[in-house]
Image (cartoon, rainbow, N blue to C red; front, side, top):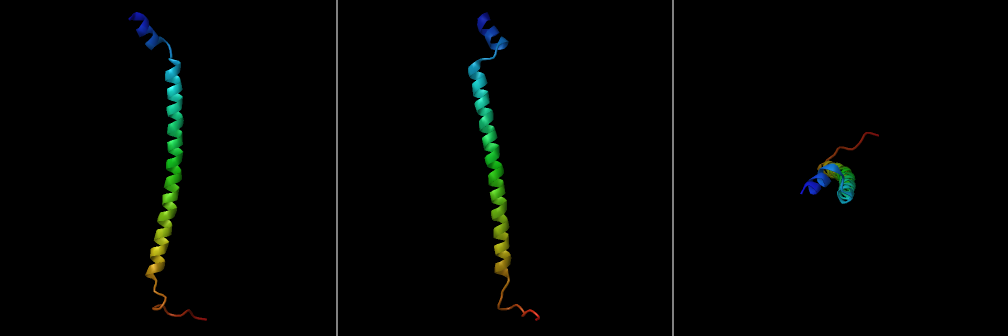
Length: 67
């Protein structure tokens, strides 16, 4: 029992370190994907807003431009 406790407290398990590195890499990948998706969402929101503005303008009711 003492050896198990000392092994747990005293040293780093290589499997645990490998798992931590793998999880840290996965977190970085997910953060990058989140930034990419947020940028894509912002672009789509801006495009949709522009479309709504353009749809609200009725070209037939608009006055002609002065020339």
